[in-house]
Image (tube, rainbow, N blue to C red):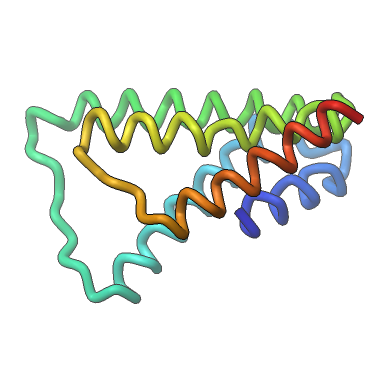
Length: 127
């Protein structure tokens, strides 16, 4: 979440001559880089996707880049206090998708942190 907040602030501060596509692509690239760093830091094995899964991976990369472009546009043109709570709603969707598709069970600290973030987002929306 600290990384997302930093990216949002950097997006607002970016020079107007940088396009939303450039900023969105850079944001997605940094997310990919962060994933690689965390993988190595945790000493996890890197498993390449099976060839049959490559179209799905490519589709996910395309849609993620488009999504980052849309989020960048929202952060550059919208009121931050309106846009930010919607940005953090991804946390709820990630918890739901992780539970449904990957049988993940979030631990109590994760749920407390998520609840805190959602509560702050609701408070911002009410203001």
